[in-house]
Image (cartoon, helix red, strand yellow):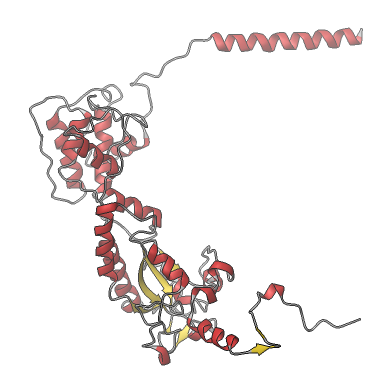
Length: 413
């Protein structure tokens, strides 16, 4: 009897589960209406702006079309709120704004350095709107209705116009270099919001205000006098052929024991204040080939022999979070640029100690392609000359990584 009861219980459970599944599949699906659909994050952000016209968007009218004059007025409100004097004008007497017309209106004030390949299949390649659409899509002000369709010929809805106006408001904001990542900078450069020359000027201004004046953190030994000239050349290259890669036009600060053929490499010593290496370090060469700009050389503990970052060439570098304390070392000067927005990237052979002093996350390697000696540092040039001058049993001695060396202090038992 017990076995029979278990079989019946199992059978009824299966039948009940199957019945519930059929009921759920047969239930009608309620389609979300425009009135009940929630706002997108960008549309919700638009509605929170003080400059957004009151009653412009309601749950009932978001899908409706709008006139060219309304669209131009909305864009002008966004431009005024962003603090610019831009004015957008209607382009024709056509009442309804189509998506390609909206792109042409935006193109009056948007300029991108390089328009990428068109991926939309519904845009006439030889048509008059192809350039305007490419500009606004590259700038990020408008997107396609799908990955391969722009929505050519479709009217622009009020909700779409509000999102475009909010994007324009953000687009016209001055670029803030504080905590900006390399990806953020490249996005701004691609969209036409920023040039490499403007970025270098922003960083040089911050170095002057906070490193040389104000708190005088004293993390920079020398500025590259040709940084602005290099930035202008890279901007022209981007406009002609596009960026070389993710480092195109990105300012970089390197520790002053990385060899730079166009800037003196002192190692922090006054004795080498005018010493210019014959060529670039391996990493510096690769950075330049990728389009990076060597903006400045950072202070270090003299010849990297210490942990307080004080040198005869650069003096004492201060900890930005507590000027009464040292920043760590020997790469203390290299640890300041990113937190204090001197540059989006700073390079040192082994920046572990200053990173720990500022609670920063860094990645480094002391050997292989990122080896200090392969990188071409001032101290390693002297070391390698000494190594090559010593012979042992008719062979040149080769430096070995420390983990491959056998201990000479092990006692026999």
